[in-house]
Image (cartoon, rainbow, N blue to C red):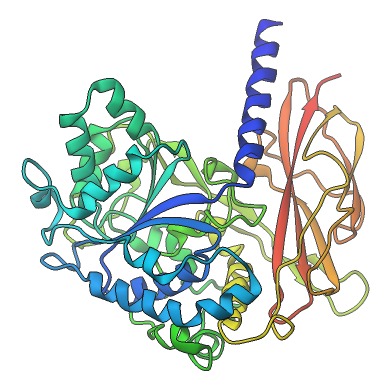
Length: 476
């Protein structure tokens, strides 16, 4: 009985925390080796379009294995000024976009030194000091560090905290940090993970970028439509005739926006829950595990390749059968292809977040009536329900609406990897109806299952938002 009560209390606390954070913007500091590769500039253009929904606390220009001796904060400044030119039009579509001066004050420099050469006594920079300053503010929200290049500016901040704060104070500050880094791009990443074993850290370790979850943002996937990452799509929907911010989006050189997955999960779209990487979202899905070093591949960048010393949030696989459009009858049906990999956890949402990007680029130049805006999903029941083993239950999207009055499409599906029950629970009715019927599986202990409601409008481009339903399946 005691174990059951503890389980119930923990469940209640988890949902209280999720609901409390639902109306809060997630804080983030960006570390970027901008100008090492055009993709940092691409990611910055997209990020600025979401500056009203993500609380950007800093932009820190850093080094990396690809840019070892210089930093380029002036390139960040240039993009913020381009954002300032379109901000008045963005405000027509949604409120809360920060003014240019506020963002410019948050642009900082890391040391122009590579990796651990920039960490230690006397190695503080305005970037590392800024991280500490933001951490020390009276704000209990987690502080995400989105790492697009080297991570030594964060390493220096941690070094200083450890050597200047009491153990209790240091522990409190570090407990606020959440790190999502795009693989390791200097030798300070493994140092951080080894010396700060309690730090929340998402990474595809090593430098074999082709095997990393984040690379799915620009990977050509055999068997699906890859049009929305094509150069032609980018030219038409992002770069040309979309104002100064679109004009600042460079052509792809090595890969489109490899850094963007590090903050996509901070967008409040109803699917993303940043504190739970194991639940999946636009930034991919990750599990807390000790990577198998023997199975890892070396990429050849020169970044140290070492075994992890503790569990990290890292690559996790999804099994996925896409739903595809059908010309007649039920509007969607399962594809004939099935996919299984860590990259699936990200590219399965790729059309959705690319359409969202294109819509926001339209906001830079179009009136409200000319542009599209995302639907607003709703549930006709609580977001958490409990059912008995073998019992039928309904899921309902009553109250869902669209700000533009667009017609809406619905899609319900079980996300097996996000809960404890790993076998797919089918929808026992048309999965594209507003209300569906599901039969709970037979269980001999409490299991959890998550169902996703995806609502998509028929505007141009088509935009999607989501709701999660948490189902506790109890034995009879």
